[in-house]
Image 1 (cartoon, helix red, strand yellow):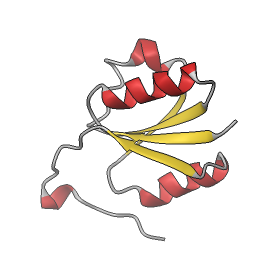
Image 2: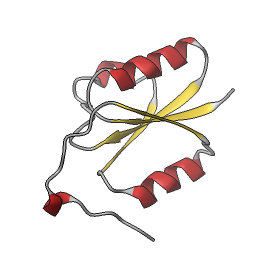
Image 3: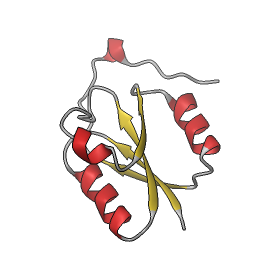
Image 4: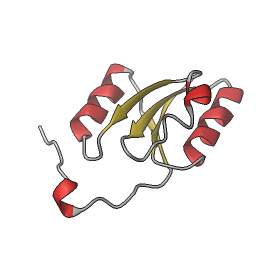
Length: 93
């Protein structure tokens, strides 16, 4: 069985993809982008998946999650609200 991570922005697309993978018996993990992925709206559906919430630009944290879960397949889905230039900070290590 493949391990797939969905890096999820806003909207219903990330959850629809996760549900589709679940029906095909494919294990998926969701990494929701904070202030974009609507965890409260998806609370009843998200209980079927493992997930993490990260800030936009948290590349190091995302890479650590991928390494920990031994995930090599990534799907990007959903919209990302455009942040102001002062809100952007990328964590390079």
